[in-house]
Image (cartoon, rainbow, N blue to C red; front, side, top):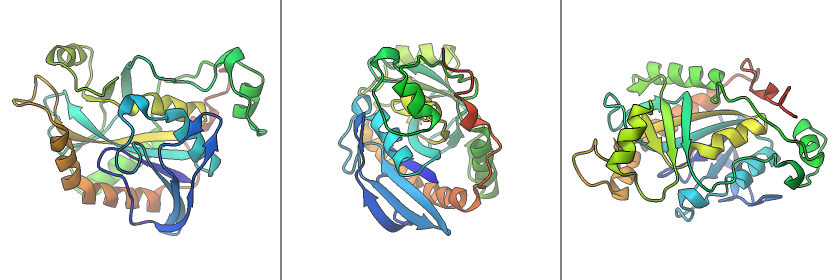
Length: 277
């Protein structure tokens, strides 16, 4: 089942015919919102609001581990995240879509793994994830290609067909937040090769990968980043741009749901092979 994580400005997905609303208690605490399980295009889909309904959780306090685990509990094995980002690459303009393919992590205090060796929590289940946690294994996953290539290709096809302006690749720099970055920080990130900046893409992507989920991110450039923008950054600007793009985002999501094949050709589900020490 596909799970959709809605970021800033995408708190609901009204197109879903709701089947149930599930509040999942996980070994890692509660998720940021109940999971809406519904049907669209004849397929079951789960939707979770990353920041909670009403935007209750700032980026550095989002319960990322609980969110991904809760999606797993309801049967999700693929995740498509929607995120607003700031543009660093000067070719990336406000309103553009970006199908990111790599990331830089500049977060500071986030719990970014399930596998904590002797400190791992005990969980129920008979799959490889549960075994590794129960046996207190140390696990090092490969993130050479952190975003699912099969899902990324489908997103590119859909955006191309709908003639929406997009960039087929980009490096996402994740900062701690909740403040916006300084102009000096953006200058540093640009020199390091970042194309966009956000506050929520990490550890979400690696947590999904640790659970052998496919994960892709549909990013929308909400504004130029600090020092590139000619004016003061505001949250209002981000929310206004996401509101303008809401219809396009939801149409892309609908197409992904309709066209995502049942068979996986990406290898994301094999990430734990050879990863335990």
